[in-house]
Image 1 (cartoon, rainbow, N blue to C red):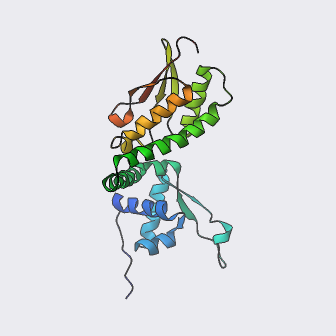
Image 2: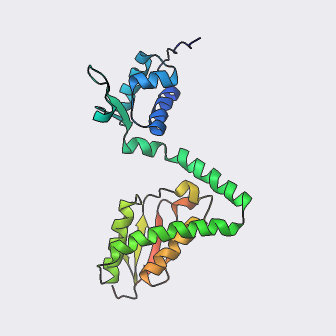
Image 3: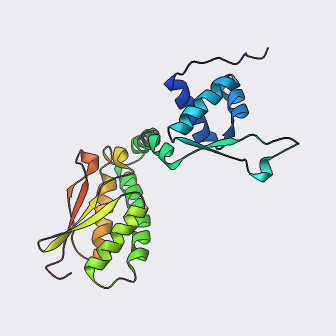
Length: 221
């Protein structure tokens, strides 16, 4: 016997369920969501309208390859960049759980190897961005711009005998608070790229408002 769809009230938990279904399954129409979640089409559309108004979802016409049969194709709804950010910590929790499991099954060296591998990938990206720069200050600025493109919202500030690299956002802060090896490997990567010892003065993962890295220049920038 087919289960009757549920008629739901404007429950924020149900709205989150709708958004998460789109995040995990990709662009979906109201009809597909109704069938997937067992909620009446009217209830689904009410939640979709609210999520669009909040900037979490956006609607568009489906890709031509997905249109079958005659008639006007149904709009599909997909997650916006802002909407994805609202679910960051959910994926962070999964990452933390995965790393904890790995640590329980293997040695601590495997965690460090993972952190070093991730930092090496970041190092390659930053090295490419810095390759054409000559002065240290220009290299640091190119590094900051590349970090910003990776979601770190980085800026630079001149200090006596050095430069502070400030990262105002950390996409992995929740994970790094559990596994400081990630921050340590990143710091070592920055040192290798700049050819000098750098010092982390503060980190978001440890509760500071910004990740701050001091880079000595010896007055020669």
